[in-house]
Length: 208
Image (tube, rainbow, N blue to C red):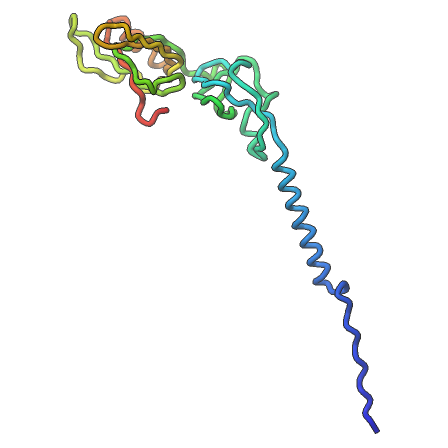
């Protein structure tokens, strides 16, 4: 007699395999993740950017700012939104033209620790000195007519608001500058101007 062959088991359908369903889930999750990232990238937030260079102590106005739409994600909370600027807020550091305005760069009026003075430099200043440039103010005290002591740093950290150059003076140009200086340096600066010290303004090392 011929031995009976054992019945063959029918192969399981591929869709009944748990690995198949797991693969489908992973593919769907991957596609959903990609769409989520793309969607987040398309979401923009209206924030303020500086329309011009803003110097420390300057009160922010509509003319100084413009609204831009940028995709910042979670970083959006670090910048001043288009509806978050309060009247009277001032810059506490230099904000370059085009820079997004971070909350850390603005504050209430009483947060300002600087003020502005106008002084005349005995010599012209470099062409690189423009609004927003960080400079040092040097003073050479007057000993007697035409004789000055060695110059020394009067203000170590000042910011240029405006500069007017005068090339008409004989023997070299001169410049008049409006500067933002720390309030602690105001008395020394005024004293140097009143005692006819020779003042010079030079860019700070590493300054803009």
